[in-house]
Length: 237
Ligand code: SAM
Image (cartoon, rainbow, N blue to C red):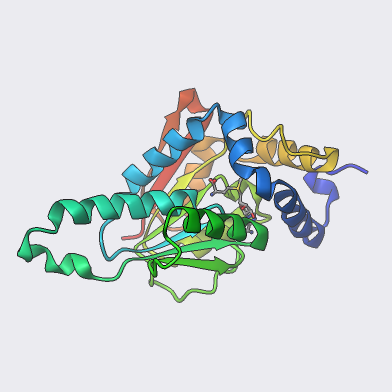
């Protein structure tokens, strides 16, 4: 059987995505480090610094199962709070922060939850884990200040649907795939699927124009490591 996208029915594809990530969930950190030589950590740092999170922020991180992006957002907000805490003019900083981590795969969410516990965030009400599909999100319109999807959009069946869902929220920021990625993905079918999904993902300019078509303004992208990875961002104004 061939697992090129053209040969796979859509419902099979979603299931296959699920299988791929179930099979890698427990080795996810190791896989990421191997794939990127540890650089994914810096890329995610950069994504979050571009996002510029703030206390009281309501944020949605899609395809975020492992919590990598969410933990960075919370760290950023905590350090702002620590710096500002002494000043009574900053009482508004006590407003409740909510970082929703949404992923289609419960195994990935479990990995994230476990990592949250290890980081002492088990009781942290700011962190909310939600099982859901990037193509059909369950949140109300305009309920988020930000939206991120890091290394996730290449896995979806309809990029346009994901973008129009993203546009239902406010500011958003994107991170795309390292082309050399995911050679560690176990069995041959998973591997072929991942290679295909990387090859098929639109180049930076094209993806930027898709964001514009979805309604975003001030669309920009920043290439990292010479364009192996890019962070796209756009605003809903
Ligand atoms: N954002 C994390 C990071 O950068 O470390 C995880 C990236 S991982 C390569 C891709 C994630 O996308 C997996 O957790 C997978 O379950 C999730 N995913 C795939 N298709 C999805 C969809 N349609 N909706 C939501 N999540 C999806």
